[in-house]
Every structure is written in structure tokens, then in C-alpha cells.
Length: 341
Image (cartoon, rainbow, N blue to C red):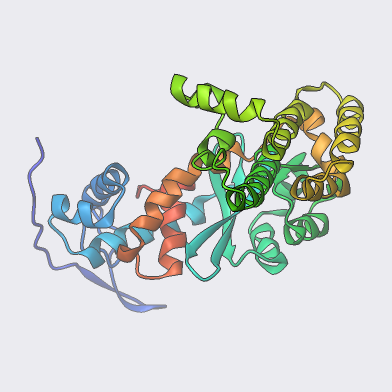
């Protein structure tokens, strides 16, 4: 069991002929710190465990500002110690800080599940600022980059990573999200027309079309089957969306390209305008979609860490501003060496 220990001491001073009067460095604390090394290590453990500065304060018996200062110092310490390393597989993604299009851009190490860089905004300049935080050797070590279809991120990656066109992989989950949203647009349009005719077959079915079949209850599956048998446009859009999933099961980009071209011809000759828009979007960047077959990466790490970052964002009232939000992300997700020595 540990007990609170208060150290009272006059720090000795020495007179240096070159630098004048200086205080000696204390063996139990860092320079200008009110807390011992042992306490700061303990505080970092508590901050990591509670995932909140406010929660740590109540355990540590110190103020919010004191807890935050320990967290800030830990991040600064970790960044100073950070060594250049190989980053063969990275992801670049955006996260909303607040409403009204207030974003930050992050670069992830997909193998270590850590945030390697963070900057304000989600445009080309923001992505460039992230890449600038990587060393030249780290950028040279990149073999594959997962991202959504953001033109800004594509442009920045091409400007910062050698042979980027061969390394960019558009995230399959992002593409499937586009297809799922297209299905919902078809459903809403068709439902509006059916309702005008007094037909409520699509009313209350949104979840059925957007969820995976494995997630439906028996009753929901029965309702889905009935809607499917009605041969509505929504059902056709859903079928094309489900067919698209097979794009990522192929072993080579050539096989995936052949599959997509067949899928594209089927979709483009329908009247499903939202699905046709998705098909054209994929076709424009097809090489960087089927590159998944070569590199086998997605931004799943980013999505997996999203819940952790979202939890940080929910507590952002305690972090007061965007700079504090970024500092908190690096503290909890940066994989840094945080502890004093």
C-alpha cells in the first residue's frame, strides 16, 4: 500500500562561474516539478486507467490543471523520445472535433494500432502537415496507405510518398458505406412514390436493408423476405450492394477488375441512379480499389480506434480546446513512452 508523502526541502543552489547561481537537480523530481517522479508515474497510470482527467483528479487529490500538466508533460516527453521507425502500412483518416466541419486529420500505424501524426483540418494542407511530422526514413518505408476516396488525401499522399499511385488503397468499408447509403436513397425515393399510392410496404424497413442478414431477428428476416419477393427497386439496389462485397475476395487485382467490370455493366444499365453514381465513383479510382488484393489493408484500425477517440471527444469539455483534444489523442493512442525516468 502507498501513502501520500509530502517532501519539504530547500533546494540547494550552486554558483557556477559560467552560468551564475543555479539550483541543483533534485534526484526525486524533474526540473520545476511539484511532484516526485514516483507520483508522476502513478498519475500517468491513473490517467490511462480512468481515461479522463476529471476522474484522475478525484483519485490523485490534485486539481484539473495539475493533472492536465502531468498529461501534457508526458506527451511532450514521449514526443521528444520518439525514434524514427519503419511504417510499412499506414492509414490516413479524419475525425470530427466539433460540429460545423471542425476536423482533425490523423495518420495511423496500421500494424501497431497507434496514432503517428495529427493536424488541424481535413484538406490537403492538413494531410501535408501530418506527413511533415514523419521523418524522411519513415515516409520512405511506407509500402501501402489506406484511406477513403478523399481527393485531398490522395493529392497529399502523392506529394509526400514515392510511387504513391501503387500504394494507395481505398478503404473497402468506406466504399461499402457509399453503396449502403445508395441503397437507402433508393429506398427513400421508392417509399415516397409508394406512399403516394397508398402502399406502405417499405414503411419501417430501413433497418432491414442496411443491416447484415446475420443481424436480423427471425421476425425481421420474415419481413425482409416478404419485401424482397415484391421485386421492388430497393431490393434490386440491395442485391447489387451485396454483390459488390465479392470484389474483395479475389486474389489478384486483375481478377478483381474483371469482377468489377461485370458488376459495373449490370448496374450502369439500371434505373438505380444512386447505385450508378457509386459505380462511376469506384470506376474512377478502380486501380486504388483493387490494390487491396496486393496490400490487403483497410482502415479498420482507424475505425477500431474510433470508439476510443470518440470517448475522448465526449469528454472534450474537460479538454477545453482542439489542441488539448489532439494532446489527449496522443496520450491515449500515440503509443508514446510517457513515463519520467
